[in-house]
Image (cartoon, rainbow, N blue to C red):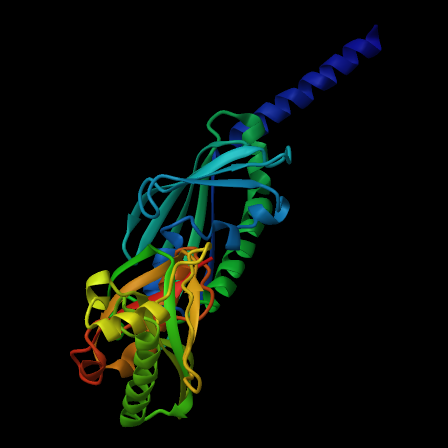
Length: 377
């Protein structure tokens, strides 16, 4: 009986110490970590002000690669929400939701998860740094409140180790991720893109000529485009086709001295009115006019010796922007579009192209106008 009493007394002392120490422990915790990147502020801010690239930097996905991530609300800014659902009992279910953001300065995110505590908030603060403010310092802080949850207060003793390690790892992965984005500010004067968006491109029929790898000289490029347009025109005439939009330039490589590209013309069958001319012309057109195949492609026969090729392109999604300026600025415009697409969680594929909406001659002036496309997966 005495031993039982001694045990109960000891247990009471331990419980009392647990409560006393727990009450003395902080009722909330706050930790901070930082990393630096040389990417443009626009790229950094758009990355943290959206949860579309969450899986590419947040350590949560390393703990469970099969975790289900669901995006809800707007693409970016206040209300953008990511919900996660894991079969891993430690992770369970939860969410990240942007509650406030200030352009190029700060983004606050509310976190719900299975760890102890409430009012969990992580904030990214962005600060220009380095020589001429060319770099950006990304500071991420995390705060959590425990109130009078004594077990939570004890759990707070390990926040610096557990959550702190996650902050360090996440920021390191984010810096590496940002390093893969073209360092072009797609909202700055150096790349005056407008109407940035993702569009659905319908199925198309195209005639193309490979221009080869030619000297990067304005007159050489202009002549190559016009000469290859003539080949395409002859192929169109031989098949009863007409242009279905402006000429396109599809870039393979834009080097310091050489430029490799294709000249491409969207085409379609001529209308009946266009084909109904003279009887002789009518007969020739009937013989050469393409007809739709079962899969929607045209039957096109390229005249012998003509370098043009025909292709039918299936519907796809593409990053899109409009650009105004000299064609020499298109390389920056292309990289800016890729930077925007990547920052918004889209992976570009294939080669980019520009639809020269203002025509070829105008493209060699500062008044050239273009629609820029880069397909995304």
